[in-house]
Image (tube, rainbow, N blue to C red; front, side, top):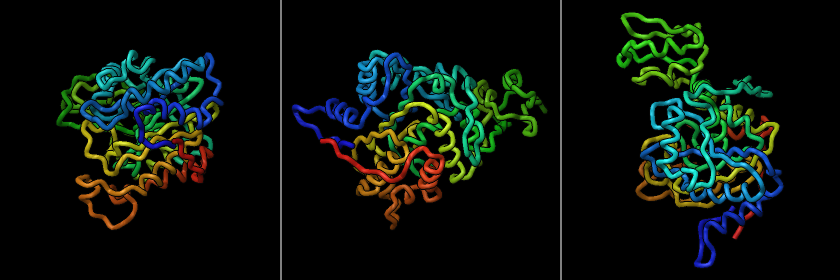
Length: 362
């Protein structure tokens, strides 16, 4: 890892490049390979997402080694600025992730409406036997994640495992992680246009009094209805327990990473109390820590979390208002979460080890 201290003759660009070199990145064979760089482009209105300039450092490094990088993410399950590929691209460009700024193109991995997915087996998965992953992610030869480390209202922390597992799931995949995998129709918002029924993959949608209804016994959870509803009347249930959600995310991460080269960088900065999926961000809950890199996503998340827990609580933040007595910032912020579950599950799946050696680059 490296901190954010710089000088007149030592820029952050040079420091991060040195971090990448020292972390063994050159071990990856990138020549002629398609390299997926998974990042969260930030919901419009949120300012805690990573600066595009940080991504450019990695993109340039990949290209220097003969790789063909592209930035990627999957469409969201909820209503917002990244619900379909066109809006998602617009949001990415609005937040600075245009090709001329980052040095590579953006590909929304699960297609126009979030339905372009690949079913990937999860070996030893408890809750997920086949993960639904955005096709472009699985088409890549090499996978790299760039993560903004933060707190999260459902998982405790939003680290590299969350960035990969939830982020690479298609709309149906995200629904499977967040709930039993079936949506519902908000009757007050439905206008009975029939768009949902036209795209339903299982003929599960009927109408009563010109309002759509979903037969949950037939519904397969493909999520197409969510993507096409013009009034955002079709919504997921969000009824999964947080611990199970954490385990499902680790199982989705296993589907993405198993069987191909991967590498990960996490920025512990602007550590907001909620996910970057929010259209706003509150004040950081702790001071900035630094940039961490590893081939092991479990060790990386553990190191970032441990480092964050050693930091003092930032004044005038949501965490300071909670006035909790415990030493776990993330548990104090979101008491119903347990961030350790995701890392324990990922370790069980063979994605890495929570034990690590932290080497500081100056």
